[in-house]
Amino acid sequence: KHLKDPKNRGYSLYFTGHSLGGALATLAALATSASNDLNDKLPIRLITFASPHAGKLSFYRVFERFQEAGRIQHLRITNHDDAVPLGMQVLGYAHTGVHLNLLSSPSDKGQGNEKTGSIPPQYYTLANESLPSQEPASSFFASRIHWKWFFGNPSHLLQEHKKRLDKSRYYLERLTLDDLFDTARKQ
Image 1 (cartoon, helix red, strand yellow):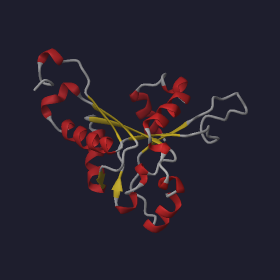
Image 2 (cartoon, helix red, strand yellow):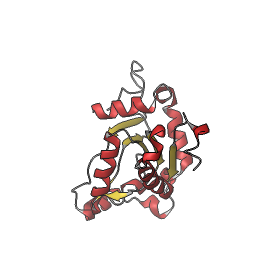
Image 3 (cartoon, helix red, strand yellow):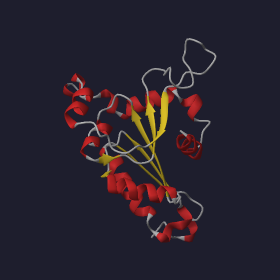
């Protein structure tokens, strides 16, 4: 009701969540983006942190159609060594949106490395989401489950996301969500 109020024209609509809240925000954002009553709020913006998969391959395909139609944009932010976002991929679940993967140290694969100083270090990677893994479940989990799961998972905490985002702040704050989506689609 409040979203349709003429006083609220010109505002964008964002959904966000962490962990299970991110998966629920994904479901809510997709359902909201399907409403024709909110065309002035499009695209719906969705930003999730450490979210597990929200749906299987059919969900992924519907989400992609809405994204391609400009009804929704999803930025999925994860810490590279967090297993929660990886959990259900081998069971046919798929992530949606653009993936901003935060690293704990600079990547030699990205824009450069700290040693040369000529190119800024990159503490993140950016990619358009891919379809579910075809890797067997036993090898998938064996290669990703780590002892720290038995003693807590600091990589899953929002404080760790903030720490890693701060490392990339100089580079990321110069980009818009549209820039991130355009960059990911070109890869």
